[in-house]
Image 1: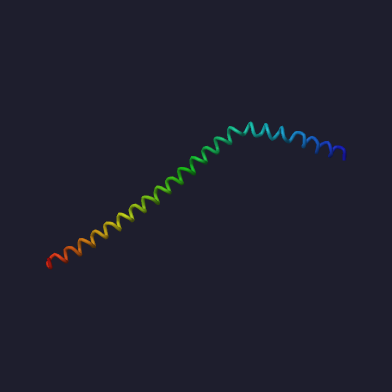
Image 2: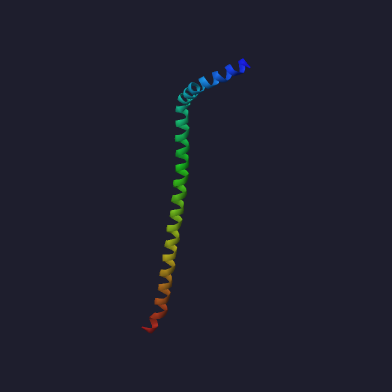
Length: 82
């Protein structure tokens, strides 16, 4: 019982120091991992957003082309009546 109590006290006393040293030793690797993950996700998100915007621009250009072709067809069919 006394050994168990000593173990609990030892863990409670050493936990903040162990946590601090663990954080300090892993800070550099955690920062690098976070930077790499952030870079990867930003690249993926930016590429997907760029792709979606380009597709939207393409669809708008196709709609503009179809409207111009429709206008040209109406204009050509109306030419003999002018």
